[in-house]
Image 1 (cartoon, rainbow, N blue to C red):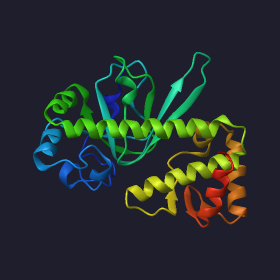
Image 2: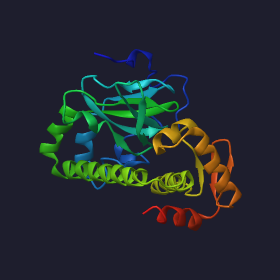
Image 3: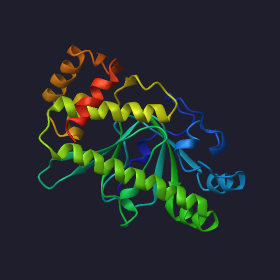
Length: 253
């Protein structure tokens, strides 16, 4: 079984994590986005009882690989994770980008193994949720199962929306605008600034995720900066004209 957990660093390491590892689900600042949302005290306690492993994964290390036995889903506490699929010709396609408060690892539920690789984009803190134990809690806490299905539904809708935006031969600038709006709305859900953002991926990864070249990503950023829609300094982005970004997105739908 593939697993580079031995290369990970555990709570108490020297890695910088913006979240306290002894924080409970009940007091977690990301509770409203994650599984504990709308649960009562006893129900949250039942969930907390099975989350006994919180991990810090260094940048560019895997949480799991395609083909690895499926054991758990994950919730991001801080940092970011990308999921990738590698094809027989050696090409790799980024299938997802996950940020704090978001769950991932669903690809293994229907099979006995994960179908994609999951890699930390930066030093990342996650809660590991054993799925067999989670299913047991579902039987005791129906509200938790409903919440889980709700989050899975949102993930499917987001993925279908992403595929729809890639379906048409639209300008790279339009696709990039859609990506920035997604980052903005997700930051707002975390009660963070919706206009001052930090890109979780490199330009090359963004291009892979959006189906355009790295050079196309660079030109698209230059175009958005020139138009006054955004400012950019390295990975730091400030959205100046949200309406302009939304107009670009509307033009591809």
